[in-house]
Image (cartoon, rainbow, N blue to C red; front, side):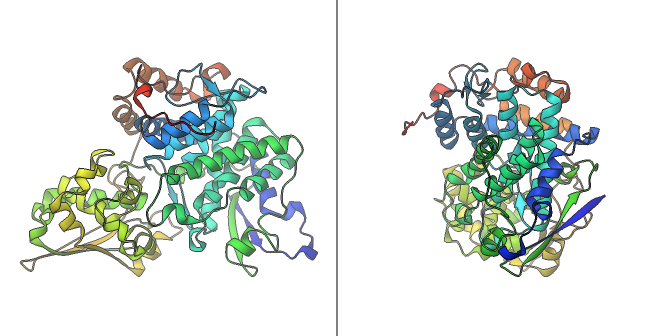
Length: 508
């Protein structure tokens, strides 16, 4: 059962009571101590493993190294034991907001963890680093950590179901700040009033433009959600000290909805769990089998299939054109509809290529698969036959695929489309795919063994075998972990690995 919160702008003279504000209702959900259902616990374990997997694969990448060095240059705050940093020895701690920062960048860097798409889009696994960092700092046990993560997922996904940010060029992490703050509030058992203030501060400080995901996409793409997590930790700290927030943050006449979203006349219906209702939203999210933008997942799977069935389509000399008929979002964000020349540039950054479905489909069609490193290598992007094929691929919006993309019915919600390949001999190849193979409704839905396999694949180059087993053992016992075991819920790199990574110097 859900309840619908009707969100609209209120004039100042209407004096909207706190109890009628979305931020207050979010805080009420965070303080509702309903038990976390077993299948939700299992999925939280999967996502903790998933986060660690993609973080392991990114440990030596420059943005992750920079964020890690920033974190390590800050001492543990005096109010707790501190939090671990991915890759570092377990006894090497930093302040929780900086651990949230470093670990958040590591998790997001490869764009390879879980996703939820509806009115807006999100990577709800971004909630885990800040909530875990605070849990380690204050000494929370596994049960409290599970409750906090369940809240973080619930709030972010519920906001994403109802409120579109990208239409107004606001980055999607504006839904993450409030959700992480709420999750931390649940973890710590804070009052509704305190969480309300933290949610408002977290939203106020995490609204930014979408330029971080447009044009020549920079390394900030990985930092943006980590920044939101860091702000959430700091917002909770300030609220716990009695500091207050802009109010009403969503509904005010100078607030987020009126000036950043649909304007003074706007309204949204936000679905939220009723009092006593379990937080189950995580079950509606899905992870990635491939290291690429989520809307590319199904297209990689289709290209992999076509590689085996129609190898002639991988040779640009045989191809006249390839058109991917797809949703509005896919066409305009990662397709040719974005009108970004960089999406067809062989010298573009990894972040840009990750947001170019013409590039991704070309490589997957030629290689019959996708690799989180090799598929983005500069020499791979510059290969002459790939560039030739790539430049023959365009996207087109299809109204039916757009409708399915936005459908509220999980059985018909789709993130794929139909490909039309016209060969030079006049042959036309048409295939379609609705969801990725790893999607819950896909050909091979991800289960626990798939998450573990993904972790082993990505961790084996950078973690010792014993460390892989140690982490997997802890993660799979998550709800039963003691506070001391929660403080060990991290990954330690092979000796010397981080010494070979960039160690940039900055202000700190």
